[in-house]
Image 1 (cartoon, rainbow, N blue to C red):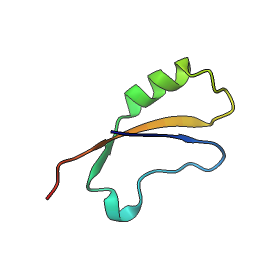
Image 2: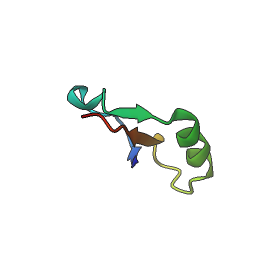
Image 3: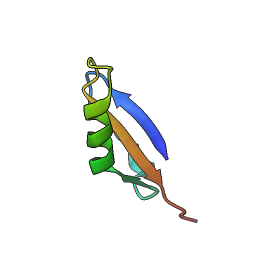
Image 4: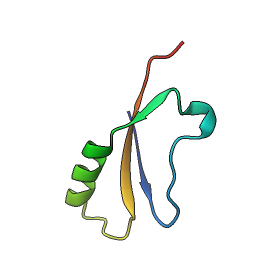
Length: 52
């Protein structure tokens, strides 16, 4: 899994990697609501898929 915060600009996996990661939106939102870093726009978790 990859975890990252977004401050001002919304970011996600680059186009070349979009088929290799799956955003875990529900988990990301739940953890962001518990996060004490109030200044970030969002907290994101992506599952890295086993694609070969």
